Image (cartoon, rainbow, N blue to C red; front, side, top):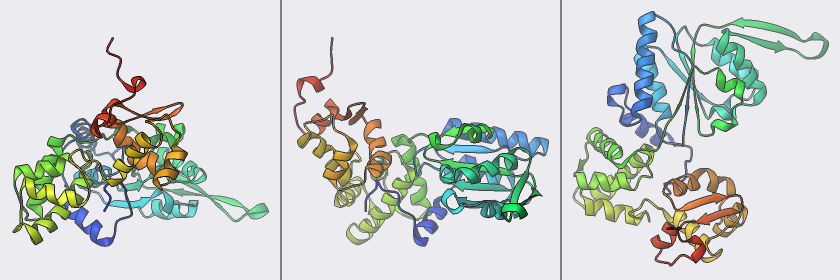
Length: 338
């Protein structure tokens, strides 16, 4: 069970997530600036009797983008229809989604940056003028049919905002970036999830889980589920700090939140490449993982926590990384104290 990867959820995983998902802004922990802006936006739209403006939510996986989309639907008292970027691979798919909406409904598109550019352009008129022009047939018989759409709200979620074109980004009325959570916020989330799951947990156990969750609520809830199972079998159904520590140790997640792949990555950088600089391709081959996975899944957390630097010459270990593994950094890696 690797906490760094973000695989497609099974039905059990989805049901587990849905059971823990808050449905109101007041129940949503963390991201206070984002939720304050969205709540104000909802209140203003409802006060005017208007449809909510389009919203773009960006940030790493597992931070609550989907949850916020459902909260917007709940607060606006409208339906939320969900799809993903890869599922909308032609204009006909998009037309089917849009024409099935009612006035005020929210269309939530996860991984919206993966919509093909040709399909993305159909969204321009849909978002601005609430019409969509569909080309029927090909060659001399080709003709364009305009479909009028109900006024709707598009909520897009993306982990890579830079892959969205500038014209597409500009059509969203509000762009919000979600950041990693503090240990205190994750502690509150773990306690809330434990109450919903009827799990007996002490504050020390909750903080132990929170501090190893990489700043991500989804990981915190998944780790809670694992620790709950461990406590059921080996600790009389009570999660204390030592029990949480033992359960997470079994997953090879250390007290700093580093999992087995994180440690393999950093140790390879230190031992095989003398701390760098080294290219991502060489690192990927050495650890047996795809370069894209390292860049998108593992490196953001390692960089945020100060273990890694990306430079034009390649990846470089920081003095903190040497210290974490009990090694003395070479002179060029030591911080300049002058």
